[in-house]
Image (cartoon, rainbow, N blue to C red; front, top):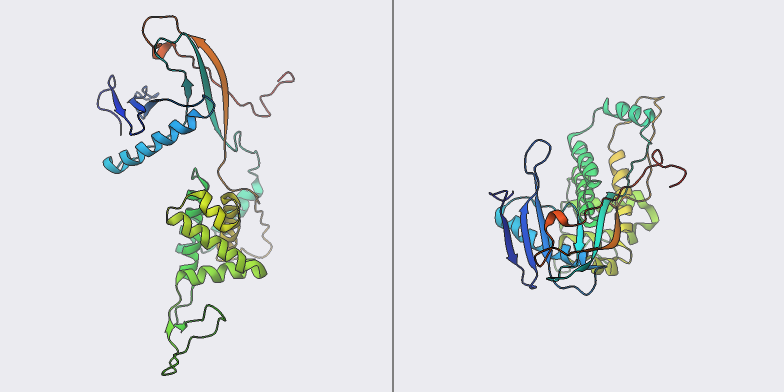
Length: 322
């Protein structure tokens, strides 16, 4: 969603006292305006970390705007930070460029991987496994470890829900694991297993002797994220950084999915990649400098603001002198 008038800009004062200016971005190559440009102006203790402070304020504003409009708003990047005191001549600036963590990407997509996909794809894959595979892929695309965790947990829950035993089973004592029995009539109540029971069983089968600790850690993270707790609280309760908990979950989900995929024909040679880190990372490069405003008006116009670009050179682009 964009503003009605390309030439207009709207101004909003946030509860913090900071001002937010929103205008439409320049048209893209097809001539369509596909986004907004937002400027946040306000006091900050230093130029080093002000971008994160102002970005967080903008994100909270966009949370409300998305709710009010039922539309999508995404902060794609933080571009520039400037000193913005009225009439100031010499000004500091900080320019940013953000790249995906795996940029440039690895040149590792070999024929062996493609042949493995072809071999698996020719088998009969259950519909629920296809859905789990979709969420496994989408997990790589989320921007934060918390959002990634939810994608992978959903993939695990899909496998567990379809694998769980349907017959009723005794309700077990949480202390000893034995069946609960009524002291008055001797009845032993039963219930059908839930998806969470199946998830615990899958984790136990995959992780073995370490399962008790891992189950506790994974469910602590899952409950914390879905209930809106902050990352620091989740990490204190779980005893590990969220990135590491995510890495552990992805490995569990991978094994849970591969167990549901029919084995390819005998003699097939399969190749699988293996990563240690799954949390989405970005590389942000910043450059601090300065410029002079000697023109008319309290502030320089948009077209007079420095706009240097930062590039990352891959191995194929580097020269001996760089």
